[in-house]
Image (cartoon, rainbow, N blue to C red; front, side, top):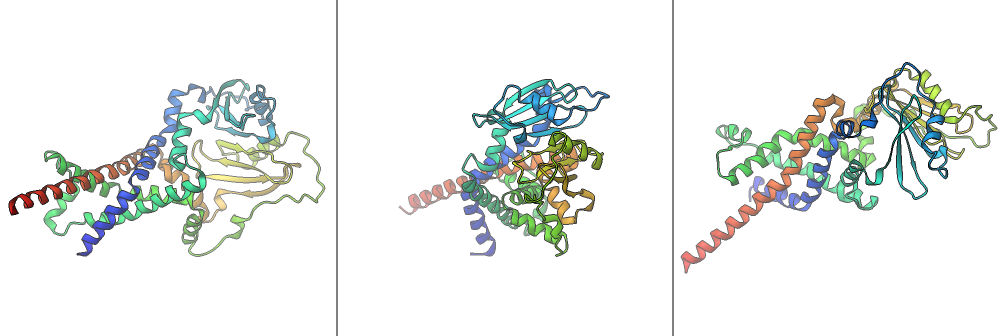
Length: 380
């Protein structure tokens, strides 16, 4: 058996073992890529008319959102401002343990829509993409293991694709559409797989960074040239023994005003729960709406509203910036609409590879059986 034949065997059996998971994860990833654009069209309440007045403070939005949910405490909610032309949202878990998102006009506090995200189409797609609807600990290894196998298959696939002779090169780059369907299927698997390999590999790798944080930490270390930056990993803590003066305004309002002053260029601001007085309250300020790469992160004392920690994007190490951009890399949106289109096409091709590969394997298997029967008839 030659090296290429051995690689072919590995490629085949790894593909058969992981194909179904790769197909589902890739297809749902393709669907999720344009979720913001699709929702902007199908959910008109996501947009509002910009006004010259400042948005209402978070406490006002929280009160309006929770008016129909008196059992939910404002301190447990997540409040997000998406910019001057978008609705603000308040997210919480209701008394029935349902994830609820309320969209409001940030200038008037009018409730525009209330949604149960458990039954939202894109929430379901995202859950399938991330966990296959399996328990988290099981999904981590099923999805993560399959993605690792997919990366190995991209490598073995490139070995199998590589032409032996110069005259074969053109054939490796083009699909022979006029040929029989088996040949077209072969070309779809090989040619499309080659073109999508680099982007598909990046999408798979950034996905693994989310599943296994230790891999992301290793990538950060490489990006930093082996240097470590302990301050970027330091966790803010609340000294519960220290006497503090309670804020004279609602904590979310203190946080929002502070972040507006210290990150004035931020279009999107996400304010986390106030906590129980023992853990910090967090806030993230993003430079561009619906983009998560360029962000400043704050930690506040849950009683006094004092800033315990502030990390600014401009001061981050290369590794820290790589970590922050991971989601935008994974979805392609770091390059805007063009990047999303590339990620969408690469995800679709990734979903097609297990299908065309299985058809290729089945065709060869049937051909081998037919050849065996023919030889048997001849020898008889």
